[in-house]
Structure formats: structure tokens, C-alpha cells
Length: 94
Image (cartoon, rainbow, N blue to C red):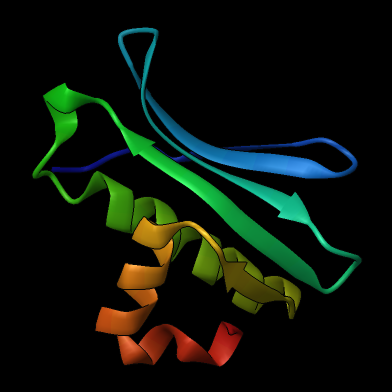
């Protein structure tokens, strides 16, 4: 299943999210920790999207963006931490 993942940022916070028919069905939020690091603090997927891999795709999108910007990620969110633990190829941004 394909998802269009959007990103919104303020000066100190941000979120990656997916909307379906105007409803937010998945979101991963983060805080900026200086210019070179973000802290993933929460990941949530609507019950209707569980089992689709949406949560992992949100984390991977953050990793792709971190790589392109040359920044690191601190996964405080237990779900995000589990994605990093299970996918060692993502560890370059830790």
C-alpha cells in the first residue's frame, strides 16, 4: 500500500503524517535539538491502518530526510526505537 507522507515543521517541532480523505491516519512527531538533531517523541497510527506498515514508513521517511540534511535522530518513542533496533541499516543516523 502506498502512502503520501507529508512533513510540517515549526521552529522547534515537526511531524510526518498521512491523511486519507481529509483524516489524519498516521503521525510521527519530533522536536528539534539544535541544527543537527531531531528527537522522535511519538508515533501513532489509526486503527484502520494498523498492519499496513505505515508507522515504519513514517520512521523511514524521517531517516531519509535526516540523511539528506546530514542530521541525526534520537528515537525516544518506543515504536521508533523498535524500528531502529530491527533495521540496523538505519543506524547511520543515530
